[in-house]
Length: 257
Length: 338
Image 1 (cartoon, rainbow over the protein chains, first blue to last red):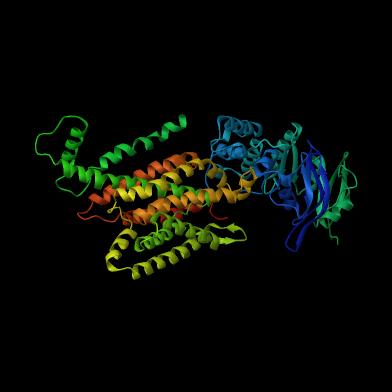
Image 2: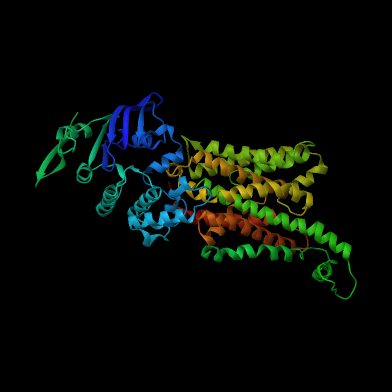
């Protein structure tokens, strides 16, 4: 298991955001994290990344309690892709990717760090834009750059907070295929996704959050459990079987609850 | 190595420029010929025919012009390097030691030290510079977030506070000292001497070396707090590590040369236009080019009129118009709307 979460609770002041979560993330798999806006998905990722401390419970990452690791030690194990990023200065793509090496760098990056950044860019297929200013890229290209930055970090686990946000279908598929290939090479990926169809097509394992609690599908492949999905999203859902696959569409008849 | 070639020009200019600047000054008896003559005789045994003015040349060159030229170079380097690091640290291309209140805070501290008999000049300037920038940051902060515009607005408030406090100090000072303070606040290198150079040299050297060591981390920080944390650096700690030396060198410059406005804002932009935003390159170039820039402006201000125009007036006029231009262009250049 790459991540084991035990009895995890979190909140700000009186407000509880996550309640007694228990789940695990298998190593070397693509785990999709789904749930409504405000259900605590981002908070959960930030907890696993060690940015914030749990109120109670524990998070084990690669067999070590996250809170016992320093920021730099954490960064060497866990890569984190924050939500849409706004650049302030027109750094080149290569300079942005190179910052992923921060946990390994004392004052300035060595040639080895530059090499790692280059190989991360090659893996993502962005070496041809390495000298372009980051500010001039499209949303899809930027996301690729930020993923390359996480790769340069050489983590064992990659957490992505809505990596497909505001991307067109082509770019969504591009990113998903890259994540898939990273998983195939042994990386553990946890991504917040919004489209259940996309999640079921690409994911190996699923975690659903509702009101700060886990709603686990009865079947481990997460498929076509219309009732559970309807519960998670609070809408009526239809499951349409097509050639051994299932597609989930909202039922326009209205919302549940 | 390939990277260095393009910038090498900035590191080659300072020494010859410092040397040539020694020839500029109001003295009629000590012209270029006399100085060349003196230099030749000091270094070789050759001499120009005619009378010599050894002791006068020596006094003017070694004790009036040299400290001034060096101090000018250092002040320009310090203000520019401080501005470059602050802009990276706050992810805000519109901030500078002046705009964040560091200059007026340090000016108040320095004025306080100048009127008192026991306050140490450099330390007092530094402490008040730090208080000022801390205050700007604190006022601008909302829910842990500091927006671009609120930082500039709070800087205006802090600037106002310390400028008023400075006026109170001036008001309470006896007329004899008042003139010194007023001249000095205008940003003046006219009174440069070796003791001023000595008092500013170590803080600027220390802060400069420190910032130079942080130059790549500024790249990491300017991507944002969450992005910094994700790669394993604590943004708060790193910011303090940059803020302290950046304030130190700007305050040290203000303490000896007064408020030389707008250098810390405009010159970092000129540097970035020349070498790009990567701080591993802009930091060293900021030191070199900041010094070159201020020395050129100072040489100009010493020769343009029969009397000497305080340099702060020139830099503010140049930098102020540049700031207007920046504000107009910043929207496209830096995607300010956040």
